Every structure is written in structure tokens, then in C-alpha cells.
Image (cartoon, rainbow, N blue to C red; front, side, top):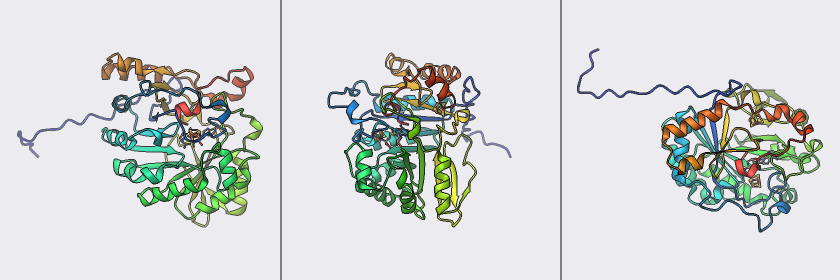
Length: 353
Ligand code: SAM
Ligand code: SF4
Ligand code: SF4
């Protein structure tokens, strides 16, 4: 067929090949922490005794502005990133967050925008988040037991508030909400069946996360980790489970379906079964540092270059340069590195999980 000369021909550039790191892992996902503050003080992340009233969180000027986050996100997308996850601290404490989501949702090439939240502010924001273009939600919920919940949020909230947040998210149109539960032996591990029972059949997906030695302040002990294999056996004794194939390469959760068709559960086993081999995630802190691992000691300052007037090409080159040098695989080396006393990592609330 002849092409009429007066019809403009749009040149669509092929999807860029993402840079690969030193262990041949592509850059595919970006987690953006929008704020380091939080309205909870979960003992496994930001224990109250370490973050008393005088702790200095980032100031407004230290945090990236929305336009800066958008520019960096575009630079990451130009390098092959397809999925964004907003996190914190508590992302919903960042003023006007739906506006940032709108800005990010407009970036050509983004296939998925998700957010992880403790859920307390969802009744206020769920509809605006949905309208702004947020695709998926993960809500952290460690227990249904009111007293244990208070312990696990550092006395700053009530489980009923999170459940109200999940209801609000459903009403706003979010389906298949992921519910993240960090399991700590002797704290909430006796309550996992109740949590599963409550959400079986709702379409939402409870995911159990092994308690990790992130940051420097949570007094992690290996004997407080409940290995996923143990949890799977406990769940399967009550409801027969069948393993599911991963949705995509590099999916962090191991998935199982209930044999009776009541949905699925997931297990994130970064302590007992590390998955560094497929890790394609970069992390951007609220002050614009690029971390190539959740357990990295140092981040690479992109804000400085951004504020010094770097061009899009220069920003993209910096990202590629850092990624191609990446050798991180902390979870696979945990025992060895801890034995050597290498336990200085960025805090979880700074990079957002
Ligand atoms: N504030 C939001 C929330 O809690 O959902 C987002 C940030 S939070 C740092 C992201 C996720 O990290 C949460 O699901 C939380 O449970 C998880 N997390 C925090 N500390 C952890 C730890 N020591 N081990 C495993 N998961 C942890
Ligand atoms: Fe806050 Fe999330 Fe950390 Fe809990 S896990 S203290 S809610 S950032
Ligand atoms: Fe990725 Fe680091 Fe976690 Fe390994 S330890 S899966 S490299 S973030």
C-alpha cells in the first residue's frame, strides 16, 4: 500500500535495552521513596526509642521536589525501567501525592505504578490516588489482633484504621490488593492463620515477609525470623495449597493458590531463600540518592547533579554508570558479611523496602 505523503509518519523508537549490571541483571524497576517520615514506629523498621522527638528527618529543601522526581523517573525510564513503586516512610504523608502520581503516569513507557502504604490515610486519599492513575496498592498489615497491632506500629495506630483503609481502597476500585505481613517469631507468628482467613476469598493477596536485618536499628536476630517453609506448612495443614508459576521473571514473592479456589498467598523469603540473582530493582531515596540494593551502605547522589543543571542525557549516563558497576547480592552473602561485622546499611524508611 502506498503511503500518502501528507500523512505524518510517526517514528516510534524501539524500547531501549536496559543496562545490565556486573552480574548480568537488567534495570527494570524503580522504587521511589517520597518522604522519610512516618506516622508509625514499627519496631522492625523505625523503633520508637531510636527516633525520638528530636530525630532530624529530611527537610523540605533536602527532599526532591515533584518536578525533580519526575525528571529522574524519566531518566530511569529512558534506561529501560517499566515499573515504579512509590514508598517511604509513609508515602501518604507527602503533601499532594496524587499530583505526583498524575505526573508519573504521563511518562511514556511506564507500564505499572504501585504504592506501598501502612494504609491509615487511605480513607482520605484512596479515590484521589485511583483517579490520578495509581494502578496497584500494597498495604502493610502484620496482624488482626488489636494489641499486637499496637506493638507493631509503635503505639501510633489501630488495626481498625488500616482495615478501614483497605475498605476505602476497594471502594475506590483497587482490586487484588497485596497485604504485606512481616512475621516475627514470638510477636505475631501465632496470628498468621487469622490474617489469611480474613482475606481468603476477597481477591486480595496476603504476603508473608521474612523479618530482615535492614538498617541498623531494629536489633534483628536470626532466631526471630520465621522461615517461609515453616509458614507454608502451617497454612497448608489448614487449607491445601498448590504452587503457582511466577507472574514474571524476578517476582519476589513465591506464590501459592488455595486448592479450593479461594485465592492465593505469597511468601517473600529473602533470608531463607535469597533471590538476588533476579534482582532488577533500583531505589531512589527522598533526597535523591540512588541505591542499588536494599542493604547498600551508600547511595549515589543524583540530586546534586540534577540541581547543578545536568542534562537528561547526563542523568541517564550517571544511572547507567552506577547500574553497570553493580555487584550487590547482600542476601546471598548475609552470613558471610555479618560474620565480618559488615552491618551498616541504609535504613528501611529511607529507601522504602
Ligand atoms: N510505610 C509504608 C508501609 O509500611 O507500607 C511503606 C514503607 S515500608 C519501609 C515498606 C515495607 O517494608 C512494609 O511492607 C514493611 O512491612 C516492610 N519492612 C519494613 N521493615 C522490615 C523488615 N525489617 N523486614 C521485612 N520487611 C520490612
Ligand atoms: Fe513506617 Fe512503613 Fe517503617 Fe512501619 S514499615 S515504620 S509504617 S515506614
Ligand atoms: Fe536485590 Fe540487594 Fe535484596 Fe539481593 S539483597 S534481592 S541485590 S535488594
